[in-house]
Image 1: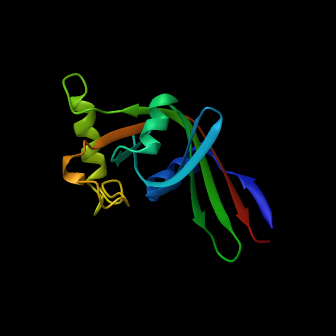
Image 2: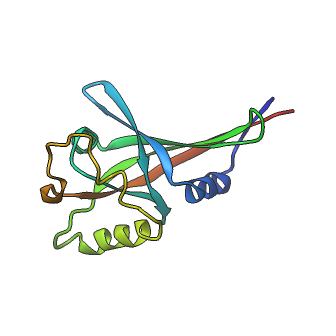
Length: 149
């Protein structure tokens, strides 16, 4: 097996072609990683969620990482790591254009709002909770590929 470094363009193509990643955030020295749906555009990863632990932690510490992977043939794979900053896009004056842009980018994909709009707690009335549009501003991207020899 060979491991090679991916170019920035290759990393961007992987981010654009995929919709699921693993989002890592941290609070008080404790890491937290969750899968999330996203859409890539203009050097950002756009996403949607209901309030919860992930949003609380990113509000507290906006520095995040995202990992996106693709399976290759056999034991091969490609993986991209994004280091960036969480930016909430509230639906209010001063942010409306950014929030509308996030909606536009996300809505190009079927069922873009799932699973961000769903929570496991059945006692919560999701229709009355404020939803959160956010983006990860990409500061740094890197990637690697494993190729079977």
